Length: 246
Image 1 (cartoon, rainbow, N blue to C red):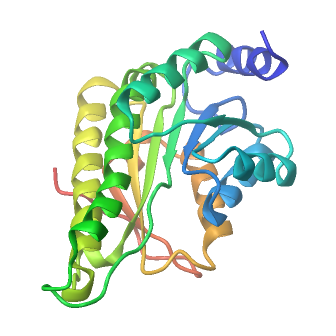
Image 2: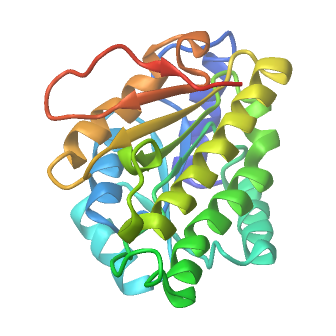
Image 3: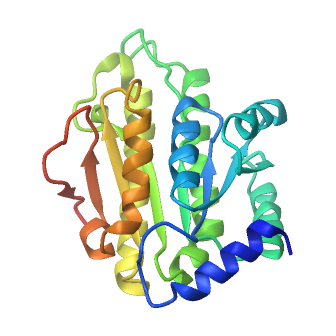
């Protein structure tokens, strides 16, 4: 057993009674090599979390590990369900079950009005949704079994106010919102100590550190306050979170 897995096992045992902060949790960041992924990884490591940073490019993961010491990195094509299943198996053997999944796989494609919404752009955007489906299905039982399971994604204000040039993008984000809403309903029935949450932004640029802080705070709040919530993320403290329709 590695030092990281030993620390996680000991901390997990001490926190079985329920949420007591982020320290000692095991959290997987999907799409970890973005600026947002680095900020979230940095905040979680500083809070005493064992962070598993997952991406598709080893060189980018190596750069992240050099920038944020303490991060554990894994290469995986999260759009491949079999690859995600194998990843989970290896994580379970080395570290145990995860307590959190932060899904940051995404990107922007748009322009050209409705007629200009290309199949190529849709395939790119749909891939991000596919990775959410794969990771959340594979690790769902982990989050249900955790004393404080947390799942979080970043969505867009375009879901509520879509426009023609961003129709592909808004549709992919809306699909992710609906998927997380379903997970939240599952947690309500199966694991009331766990929560699925959506952070909503107009643009994530400049809000990466804020996102990192808010992800850490997920383990400082009761699941009932978080499950099924869409939380606006702005430079300033936003309004009270709204509950997603169930």
